[in-house]
Amino acid sequence: MHSNGHIHDNGTGFEPILLMLLMLGLVIYIAAVIISNRRYKKWPLYRTFFWILGTLCAASAIIGPIANRAHMDFTAHMVGHLLLGMIAPILLVLAAPITLALRTLDVQSARRLSKVLKSWPLRIISNPITASVLNIGGLWILYTTELYGLMHQNALLHALVHFHVFIAGYLFTASMIYMDPAPHRFSFMFRAIVFTISLAGHDILSKYIFAHPPSGVTKVQAENGGMLMYYAGDAIDAALICILCYQWFKATRPKGSLAL
Amino acid sequence: MDFKPRNQRDQSISELRYTYSARNLWSGFLFGIGLVAFIDEAIFHQLLHWHHFYDKSTTSIGLISDGLFHALSWFATVGSLFMFADLRRRKGLWLKRWIGGVLLGAGSFQLYDGIIQHKLMRLHQIRYNVDIFPYDLTWNIAATIMILIGITLVIQTRRSLLKMKEDASNAQ
Image (cartoon, rainbow over all chains, first blue to last red; front, side):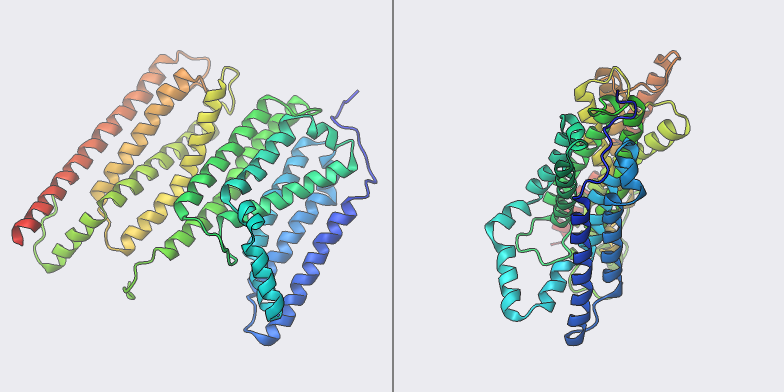
């Protein structure tokens, strides 16, 4: 009998791997800041701060009280999803990791990296439409099929789903706001339209979850989780919209008039 | 009141308004959509609890329409204000035309919400457990009034725009 929703499995064994990857990212980032600061002007402190905060947000969805409760409580699962798939990616994108990598690496390696960034596979997945489909489409599959129930019975699947939510969230954010050098750029109008449709997909899914609980989730939990996804998703996306519009505002600055 | 250029400085202001007349209208229109959606959410959903988050009679198309317009209004609120700031920066703000756009956007969205989303798609009703007819009537009449005033302002500014254009070509 599923009184609280899911079969509880502690001791999965894949969470430590995800956590170690995040910690590795943190260590490399800070090391890169220290190394590159010797050669160039100081890397802005707020970017390092964003990276640390982003790592903590992602980690809190994988380990700790939220992650533990997420196995039984759909609302806690949704808090974890918002942290891992939305808040952490925005913070990490704002930390401009590619820019940091390019200024830390030697010329040879930096050229190789920028070649990878220009390659056709990255061109395809960094397209705002592809990134949106990977991000929002992935969520639709997670919550409207059996996947959500299966995920709680299979540790590997659980880890893979969380990895996907995080990576797709990052990809989506990076395809909308350009903090790092992006070789394949799209106009503001194009990104605004794709963004609006993705946000609509997120909103529709939230209400769908409200009415149709995912496998193994009770009605009350689905209603709370759906509403949280709707309103908190809006609030976080408002930050993304402001950044995107601000970038437009800076880019369309009238040329030649200095005094305002 | 129509704006009449009296000197060189006024002349350049009217030229800027002419250049950015479309952007003034769009910024206002989008802001109007965002404003109505904000009032709808803040007052009718959150404060009064008249509107429901989800209604059992909601159709799938209603859900999709709701999601799309919700997302659009969210983006439009922020985007239109950045456009407004851009117009001010370029000294091309034409408040009368902008307000015309606001009323047009607000009225159109409210009418769409009131007739298509509430009635045809049965997304949710304005209020539950009451005779809904007076509510619907007030809702849609208010929307129509906003549209009419909006259209009037847009036409008036368009007239002075055409006049400005004519004066400019006569002067040459």
